[in-house]
Image (cartoon, rainbow, N blue to C red; front, side, top):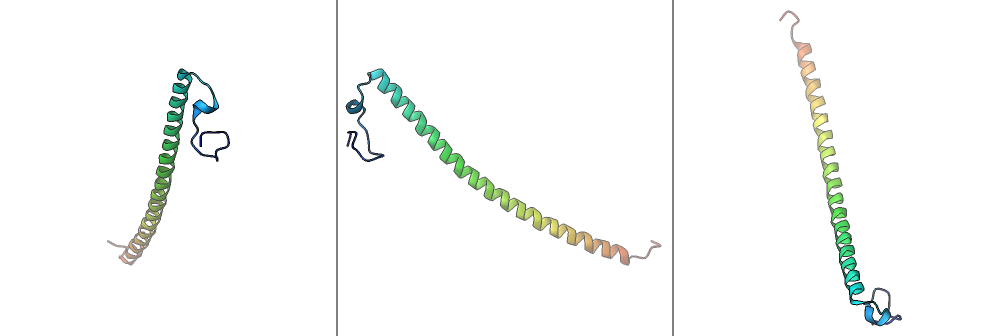
Length: 88
C-alpha cells in the first residue's frame, strides 16, 4: 500500500508519490474534503429525488381515484336531477 503498484482504490501516501509542499498537501486535502461533500450531497439528492418521485406517483394515483369518484358522483347527481319533475 502506498506505492504506484497498489490496487485501484487503495490509500495513497502522497509523500511517496509526489514531493508536494505542505501548502499543496493542505490544498489537496481541502479539495478532497469538498469533493467528498459534493459526492455526499449528490447521494442525498438522489435519494430525495427518488422519494419525491414516489410521492408524486402516489399523489397522481390518489388524484386519479378522486377524479373517478367525482365523475361517478356527478353522474349519480345528474341521474337524480333527471328524475325530478320539471315543474318544481
